[in-house]
Image 1 (cartoon, rainbow, N blue to C red):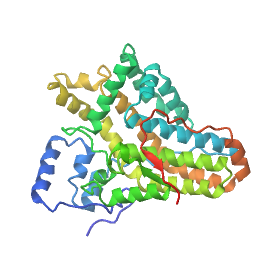
Image 2: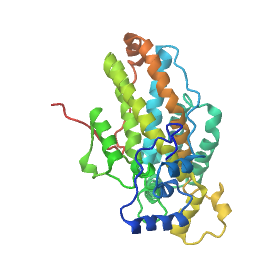
Image 3: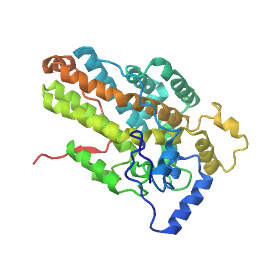
Image 4: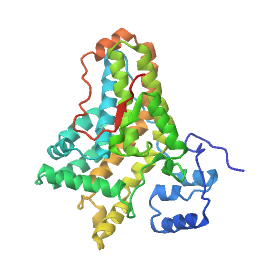
Length: 356
């Protein structure tokens, strides 16, 4: 009998196995070569006991202390910070815009990201990762923005969209051992988008809805919806947006994105990417060090994103509890002057569904 799950991370009801024994054998062979990648392990998970053993020492820390809003003004500040944090994070994990590349080179991007995160995450937990981002920026400071954008986008493509191993298959259904995309989890996430009034832009291609960049953008959309509802004095819609945030964070994002972020930040993955494209990395330890900045933007962003998501698990509950006690008029007034996030020029995928 499978062991009883002890926590949310062990309650994985999506584990499947292969009908084709040869396919199972292929994944077992890949595991021998890429054992440092969580998603490859996930593709080899046979049952719940196997899953529980895999995640035993890898579970994200969801006991981080949330920031407490004491009144409408502090609530508004935290709501905007949460929205902006998701916005900056999803910008990093989707296709790189010209504006994003310019902001990374100038340091403006890091300033915006830090300003949002520091309202949720204690400053001392951020320093190491922002120092790494600054080293990365300094290494490319001489480069023209257009060339830098091509370099950064090529790096993102190499990590997530390449079809030559090693790479990261950034889909919830893969990381939660469903062994496929466009399966049950994909449909579940797509339905959550539709419930919130969103569809994916078909002109951008037929992407599986449970892709990492899409889930991150959706989280941003839910925060924007909440803020706009409070600004309109629509308490019912604001609280509904908050409930959707809680469900999406606690029933989806926290259950797989931390493992993906760990994969991106893994030292051996950095070396594996180097071997794939450079053929030979003679000094492995040097390549893992700060002296080689290749992939260090995404490695640092992955660490920051995981840290933020760990805080978000309890933060969204804190926001929901506070919102239920605060008056609609006070929140409307506190958020009245907050502009919508400027998504122009960014690589976005969500469209509002047309109302019938």
